[in-house]
Length: 336
Ligand code: LMR
Image (cartoon, rainbow, N blue to C red):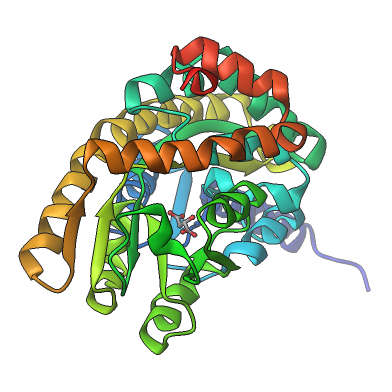
């Protein structure tokens, strides 16, 4: 059956319209993470979504899925690699299973004495070289976002190193954190973040470590009697994207998103310290757990017990990398 010229014309027009409609569909970036929206990472992710939308005039829509609503720790890494999500910001302690063990250097106890020292690494060449290692895994590292320095929590007051003996403490999937808990005499239990509250509540584990923002927003403090302000280690994030997806974006869109990421990183790293201080103050106000401040002697004995983790883990994360961090920060733990 032959087509009338008018139907051909109509067909072409419709095709054209469909094309226009298609071109107006925004590019969707699914950004999955495991913490509450009201945390440094949660807020920074929302900030990025807003900026990305503005800077691309609505051509990009970033959908943020907080609190493990889309994927838990382990699954989110797999989801990124197969392209089910496009963007994540896992903690630096979670890259070992991916085969990039060097990121666990950030978990070494007391390696950074405050944010300033940390930033010499995350905002300098060491940080850049580490992100580049993700390329082989089909992943592009865009930025480091801060959370903060960790507290230890438990139903037992943890003041002296001997107090850790026999304690079952939840950790992230990092061999450095495993060695850290063992060096203190505790028994480490790897567990997904989304399962920690229940594990603490039911006594599957006695305690855990996290920056105050996570302790507060996950309500862990409601099921922990004591929180020791130890600042014994850092927890922060690498913002990562599926490389094939990112490279496939139109150049102008990618440029706008890169700008949005730079601005969101400044925002994230500006709010993190205060957010953690506020969270700790709220935990204190709640009266549900007692905040323990360590004396200078107690802190020194924690450091002494934990320095061996730097030596034990040198082969895993790289002795040269540890050395270069000591040099960049001026915090040479081997001189303790
Ligand atoms: C944890 O598992 O304790 C943290 O990595 C959660 C997070 O993303 O801050």
